[in-house]
Every structure is written in structure tokens, then in C-alpha cells.
Image 1 (cartoon, rainbow, N blue to C red):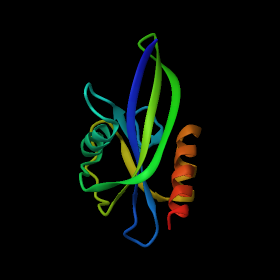
Image 2 (cartoon, rainbow, N blue to C red):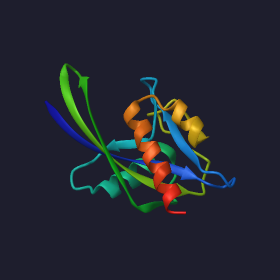
Image 3 (cartoon, rainbow, N blue to C red):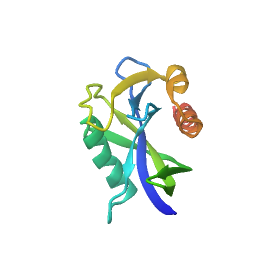
Length: 139
């Protein structure tokens, strides 16, 4: 079994007076957040900053202190089982313009209820719900 750790972010933008969350469409067909494998020597925050730049072109965002969620899942890659752990942070930007990388097919900015419906996997829906609760409790 291969063990991998990735880091990602629930990215929100509030330029219209409402929180909108960024979802990316992955080539496998699912909708999820920005995330990627940690490289040797990287901290989770460094990984998020690099992945955000690579996958969206956004570099001007702030990580919101106090939010950190973990998800774990397994998948098969080239006949090997991969045990994956993803650390998600919450981030905020004023930039809605995306430069989508070759790693994704599309993107959407959606308000909470629409984002919750669009996200494919239950564990990602749970992360979004917890992020939204966190935001509600910090206002």
C-alpha cells in the first residue's frame, strides 16, 4: 500500500456580498477543491500555496486561521492501493479570475447550497459544511 499526504483549500470569494466557493472539475469527472500532493520538505501551507498557484493562477489569497480538516480515503492507481490523507484549510481571495491548469476541465464559483449539491464526494461535502459552519461562527 502506498501512503500519500496532500493539502488543499476551500477557497472563498466574497466580492458580491455573499460567500462563493471555488470548485474544480477533475478529469475523472468529479467536482472538488484545490488540492495536491505534498512534495518532499514542504509544509501543508506551502503545498496549498503552490497548488493554488498551479491549479488556478491565484496567488493573492489568505489562509483563515483556525480551520483545518482532514479526510482519508483509498483508491487504486496502477494496481496499487493508495491510502490518501488530505489536509484542508480555509482560504479567502478577492480574485475570481481563474487561469485553469491542464489538470482540470472546468471551474465554478458557487454559493454554499449550490456548491454542496455540486460536490461529488461525501467527504468533500463534509469539509464544505464544516468550513461554512466555521465561517458562521466567526462573524
